[in-house]
Image 1 (cartoon, rainbow, N blue to C red):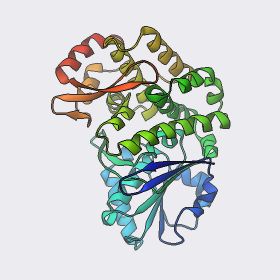
Image 2: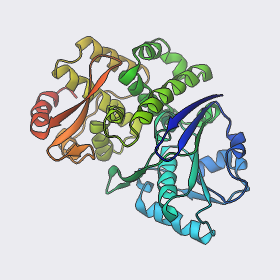
Image 3: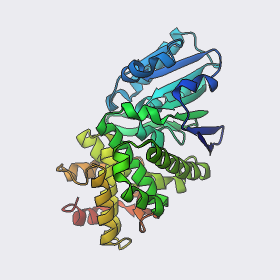
Image 4: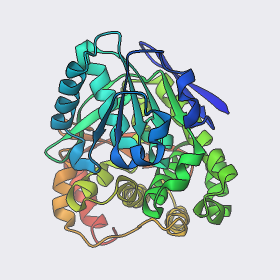
Length: 345
């Protein structure tokens, strides 16, 4: 097992890579623990928490909502939960996001921890202390910054993922290498087949690398005032595509990475060869690099992204593979660039 620390404002978070879900009892209080999960996870791993009161949320982004949070609040009250209670989320990104938001706001905040059961959650959603819900289809528009006490990343839980969910998590792995690790990008290029076959050693290596990159960035900028914005690479366009098409998050991020790469090339920051390598890696990982959609409508959604401030959007551009910068693009400039990009994305 490898432990990576995320230093938060109010509490530190221990990311436990390689720990087993069977050992979760070592990290939670002896009493007052309430589980939030979904039916699929409960059907597979329910024996690990059968003795604990449990609330199951629905699967899919439509359940990542204020209505779901309200249902959990009412359930907690019915179970006599109080300020000393502990919320344990067991599941993927939606479960962890909702449970973290509930824990951060119920009775003004109670302790919580995660058992992350999907690759997307292990490398991204459960790490870093962002908790939130969607509103009217807009991603994570209501939320908090608050660190879980621990995140268990058990590689064995990834075996039960369906193929599409597993590959979607690889998009965030690629994102992290583009932000800060050109060597790991080359590792992905050379070992895409091992990863596709869910080789435990290869998966553990890329999970640890992604967690370390994210942990360092979050520890330096927990509330996304500067450096943490880099983690939004691929997400500005990706979130717009996700809202429009209902694609899984990781697939939308893959399309967002292509958008960011081609925008970076248009700005003269990366080469055509860089773009080609990114496209080829995503294809090798069976992730989408293009999609027939209403691009003008997606663009209008992008202008409502929470990264927009007044007439500017904080856009993450690449300066080669393994380095990015945060650039404030005016809506006017972005509109002109989009006209040039529209035929390429």
